[in-house]
Image (cartoon, rainbow, N blue to C red):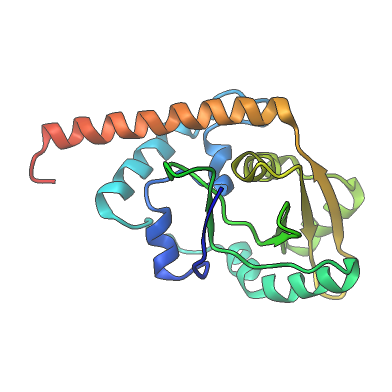
Length: 205
């Protein structure tokens, strides 16, 4: 595991991630069952383009994304208060020296447990509390982060100010992580292949 200690959301962080699959977007490579995602091709060519640009494509943050960024520090402190666990912030983590793909945890606990924080809209938070389990839309991100780091568990927190949070400890799914790693590695080879082919066809790029 290789940890790059840079501030998340800074330009250096966006440059570091350019052209590389990240756990938050693994859902665009595989679905919850491990089958290829319907968004795979779009994501593939987006990352190829980012490699040429040398930075992440600038996208306008949604209300939910902006809310999450603004409330993350508050949620992290509340997590520490409730659990008694110390959370260390980090930038971007690679599984090995090849630096092909990685993850950006919202925190690392005791060097072998991760933390993912979500600050959803009110109705979504209440649904998460009611179902009391990891939302399926974050399976790839949470399991993918464990695949990258080799951690055995990962905390998931849904936070809404003034309400009870949802805090779950998710265990590593070995079989799913194996499938995910295989598909992500294959995806990275496709990025390299298409990048090389475009460079060969268009020397001015």
